Length: 142
Image (tube, rainbow, N blue to C red):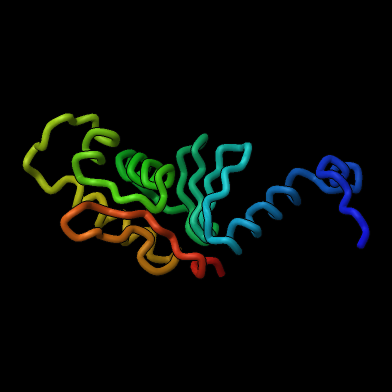
């Protein structure tokens, strides 16, 4: 079996930055896991979070999100698969270190869920009695 050329050899064979990024996106969508690229892109299949320009894309279409919703999805993306309590979200997204007694977290999570529907089945799930879990499905890529 022939040896694969080193990664840097791809550049010399005519692979450009666009081809390399497209290859990484494809690999991430196959695995259904987060892929962090050098340009500040978090990819979960059809869901892409562009950190530098603060944009959210679902199936390559720009999704309008509020600043709070963007902070919320970014926080979820960084701790994928773990249960997050409402209090943790209040502290990390809204910088509140007390329970305001409102449903602000539930409202924003609900809005974000509706906006993420195109990325696959229930990317943000409710852990009853505990909080929320961000778990994008591997089959969400299309």
